[in-house]
Structure formats: C-alpha cells, structure tokens
Amino acid sequence: MTTRHTLKFLLNDQLIETNDVLATETLLDFLRLNQTLRGTKEGCAEGDCGACTVLVGRLAGDELTYESVNSCIRFVGSLDGCHVITIEHLKGKDGAPHPIQQAMVEHHGSQCGFCTPGFVMSLYAMWMSEFEPDVATIERYLQGNLCRCTGYEPIIKAARDIGAHGKLHEDYLIAERDQIIEQLSNLQDDQMLEVESGSEMFYAPATLDQFAMLYAKNPKATIVAGSTDVGLWVTKFMRDISPVIFTSRLNDFRKIKVTDDAIIVYGGASYTDMLATIDNYLPQLSQFWRRIGGEQVRNMGTVGGNIANGSPIGDTPPPLIALKATITLRKANERRTIELEKYFVAYGKQDRAQGEFVEQIHIPLPPDDQIFATYKISKRRDEDISAVCGAFSAKIEDGRIADIRIAFGGMAATPKRATHVEQALIGAPWSERSILDAKPSFADDYAPLSDWRASADYRLAVTQNLLERFYLEHADENAFSLDELHQAATLEALS
Image (tube, rainbow, N blue to C red):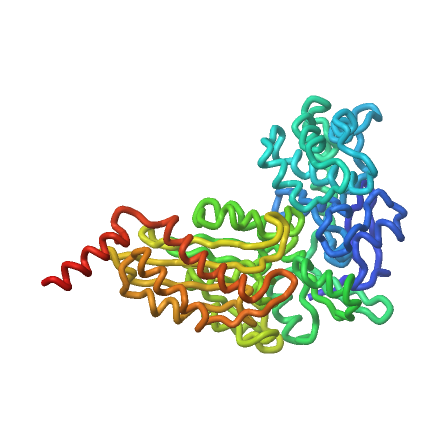
C-alpha cells in the first residue's frame, strides 16, 4: 500500500492541492479565511441553520451526485476527490444571475440577506434532481435552512418558479458534467491519504480493508464519517480529535444490500443513501426518516455513526431494536455479530472494543402480518433532536398479542426496551382494555430525566400515549372492543 500526503479536490473550477490543512479545519473556515469566498455564512456553527450550505459532488463509479452539506461542520480533510460548489460559482446565461437567484429576486425571497446564500444552495441541490418540485418537496429540501425575515412563503414561491428563468441542461453542473467527471476520476486512487499539519494528523483510506487495518493499529483515532456529531465536538467544545480517520473515500463502506429477508446496511451509508430502500422495503419508516435532521444532515450523517456513538436520543436505534436488528463489529479481519440492543451497555459505554467499528447493520424485513410503527416527539417538527422516540413491533394471532417489542430513546441512559410492558401484553387480547392495563408498567421500565427538551412526567406520559396511539392506528375488526370484553366477562360470571 502506497501513501499520499497531498489532499486533492475541486473547488468550483479550481483544483486544490494542499498538505497544509488541519484535521479539525472546517470547510467553512477554509472557504472564508483561506479562499476569501465569503458568500458562505456562519450562523450556528452546528449544522442547524443552513447559512453555510454548499454543494459537494462525489463520484460513485461513473455516477456523480451533488448533495447539500453544512460546511460549518464538514472537515476539509473529508473532501479528497470531491467537487465543492459555493454560491460564488453560480451564474446564468451570458453573465445573468442564475435562475435560482433571479427567481429569489423576483419573488422577494431575501430581506436581510444573511441566510440567502444557504437557501439558494439548498434550492440548487433540489434543482439538480427535482426540476418541477411540489411544495412538499421544496419544504423537505429547505428543512435545514432557517430564515428570520421572510416567513418562507416568498422563498417557496421562488422555488416553484425557477424553471421559468432558465433551463437545467444549460446549467454548469449539467452542461459540463462529462468534463467534471473526468477531472474527478483523475483524482481517484487506491493510496492511503495521510496528512500531518502542526500537531494534528488525519488519514483518509481508499478501501474498507485499508480502514479496518488502519483503525486496528490506531484504536485511539477518531473516526469521522458524517461529522454531524464530531463537528460539534470541534466547533462547540474545542476538542482535540487528532488523529482522525475520515471514511468519506470509502464507497464500499456505503453499500446497501437487500436479501429475501433483510436489509444489510454498511456503516458508512448516509440517511439519504438509505432513503430509497426505506421507501421500498420499510415504508412504515418513510415519514419518520424524513424527520431525522434536515436535508444537509441526512446527506452527511450515517446510520452506523448514529449507532456507534451510543447516544440515548439517537433516532435510529429504537426502530432497529424493535425490528430485532443485529450489527457486525469488525477489527482488522476479525468480525463478530451481536444484537443491537445488547450493544448499548450504559451511558457513554458500548460493547465495542478498541479498534472495532460498526461495519454492518442487519435489519430483518418484517413479514406482512407484523405491525410496525415509529414515532418521533420533538419541540420542532423538522430538524430537531427527539425528546422521545418510540418504536413498536407486534404480531397478532387470533385476536391476541402473540409477540410485541417496544423500544424507546430519550427515556433512559441508553436506547432501551420496555420489557415490563411487553410482558404485560404478550398473550393478552389485542384490545383497548389490554393497552390501558399495560400503560402503568412503563413506570417499571423507565425513570426518565427532566431536561430542557421535556420533563420526566411528560416523557412518561408520552410513552403511554404512544402505545395507545399505536393500538388505535392499527386496531381492526378482529380486535376486541371494551364492550365485547365486558360482555364476555359478564357471560363468564353468569355461567
């Protein structure tokens, strides 16, 4: 294996080659301070407001895909072989404003202007894939952008009117796609990227096997996949995370496979990577999946990272635990598979040895007769961390609950099943009475904390109400009503 010490990527129409970049240097700082491209703004520095949005293009085989990302928490070292597009590079025909910019002007989509570059770049990402979007699509692409002036309506009107101001095939990223692909292809290689600058060091392996061996030799290194968590360690807590291993070059770490009975997700797959598979094979999660972060966060954040970090309020563990998911942990060439729920040991502690990483997540596909649902409770509907996240999976046979799994995040130090509630329900009639009788058992399963997201009493009430909601949404004519149960009890007493 050979090693390269120079980071290479395209910035607009310029080739960047540098070995003078810190492991903790964000793309936003690089743009503003190093390249004097100051159209990209810093608002929150935590991936929450979208003012810093840029596009990052990435090659996967012969396919070039552009996605919106938060440059405030995206590290420069993760950009090897990529194409970064900033607001300064947008232009229309014959020097006119870009169609998105012209639409924003005509519909008064900007007032103070601070957030406007981020909105334009998010709409640019949308225009690449949704030429005639409906309002719901526009709102999804703008989930990660905040504006305190316009009230969004003018921006949505502008988004619907982009096509009136220009043709997509004339856009730079479409018209010159072949040349861009050729340039990016020339930047691809199988070399290990290793850059040391000052007291910081980062690596960017080219293959999954390189990554596995590198991490086994450097178990104290910080793995950075989407940086939606680690980015805040740097921008908010000023943590020293060196040495860093970036997984952004690992296309083989983003694979998703579907078998007859399971979805196999590699740990580097992003939420966006998984969206089509969710829609096709787990449609019960489709709406929930679109409420994980905003568009930029879903483009960056990875399912494996959400699991690996072990946060008690991570969104993916509850539904995956309810579906009996397992994970494969890898160290060098050794692998072991464990149940996902057993991975979470205690707050801040997971069953993961030094040098191990989450290589795969195995998600069993629920059979047709399995009832499954996940609910996210948060202060804001979009782009917010869960106060409570609950998942339910049940099988009903002959009007009774043959099996049920209930898992919650935000209720304990780890994502945790409600085993006392499950025991109270298994074998009971699939009825409102059974649900009501089981609700008090949540107090035996959870002793939640009060924090700024929700009080302990509120959280406990939510778990009980979500169980009832799960029943009411999935009850059918085969379920026992309260009247039927009362009549049966009366007849039994008289017999």
